[in-house]
Amino acid sequence: QVQLAESGGGLVQPGGSLTLSCAASGRILSIAVMGWYRQAPGKQRELVAVITSGGSTTYVDSVKGRFTISRDNAKNTVYLQMNSLKAEDTAVYYCKADRVMMSYWDPVSDYWGQGAQVTVSS
Image (cartoon, rainbow, N blue to C red):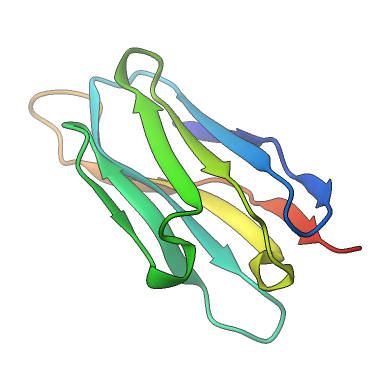
């Protein structure tokens, strides 16, 4: 009963910028970690960036200095600002919510978004 709605994907030229957003809906008390993963054709899915409820962030080396992850805890929404995009950033980007608490007595669960295509090309 938790859904992650992604938006913001599209086509952009190298060096351009794009912002992804992902909103979690449902009866949610808290989400410990929200993040973005990406998968290019023929490659494994990789972590791009994650952010905790307290604001601590982690990025894969290839996007450090170019991407910025942020979140709005009140809206259960995570964002990924992507700058200086490169062709190698082309992939399907998936939003993930880890340790989603729906009650104080039930176990936490993880959820994935459906993916957003990001294409960087001239």
